[in-house]
Length: 255
Image (cartoon, rainbow, N blue to C red; front, side):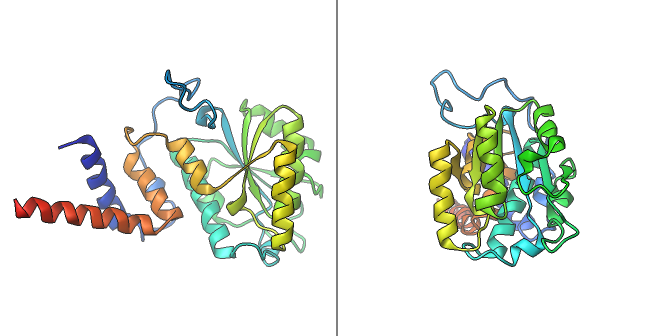
């Protein structure tokens, strides 16, 4: 049996029994191998992509009150994408930092799923600063990870993500902004933010792209669990795997 078929069969079983499992179930996986110093291959592949061993995921102000103002993406999709990032971080042992400016005020508490799914996430309280990069404890926590690639998402994109993303870029970090794990009060705000990110050297990306850049190859022990994450971010992917396995089964019986 080919290795690709083995992966697909394992993935099919995972999706069949895991897609309705409680949050975080798919992330209960075999620990990945020790991270290499670089994800760049001898072919040059990966040169333009993020290096998971040099990455920290930063989730900014995903707060209940702010969610109620989001208009450029459905809150259900936004939260689902944030959950996927938390699952990916746990599975691949990527550090996670969360923060909120004033969780006891009208902006509300952080969504609880992040720390439930990724218990290794570090929460940094702020003293009312709108820009997380204005808070010394937050900046120190980022620096203490030793990572130079920051994947940021938050609410609002135009403020909570924009301000620290631009400051981090100026401080010498490589910064990605996950647009579909963030939200803004309007499409105009979102489009304007995207333009300013590009002008400032911050790389706009999506949850699916982050997953794929971390993934890189199916030839890895946690392939089935990663497949489950693809099904999370794109539920139709589960149907693709199921239909493929059924077609393979029918073809085998026909022989």
